[in-house]
Length: 113
Image (tube, one colour):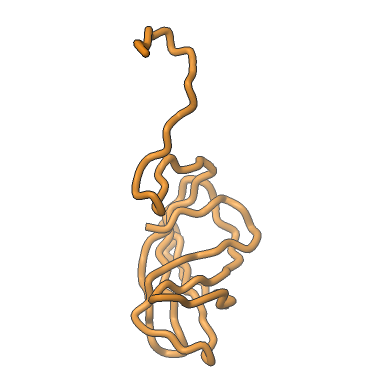
């Protein structure tokens, strides 16, 4: 699942793609689950390295909503997935494959050091 912010500016979507051709245009069919009305948006290819495709899209995502996305290169669907939109930041770091630790806060608990 892709997690994006509720903003109407350019956002980067990173996916694992089955195939890639840098000479072809990419488009994304974004469908809000509430309305089930698909909208086609043209994406800008940023990079493709080791099967990881990075594309930039502009769409007016709304907070706490789910969307489905299909990324298409001409007539070939190269990715299908879900999007969740939230303004909260993730505590999970996918690079380290671990959760980030919270800074030490005074929670009232006595911590033995």
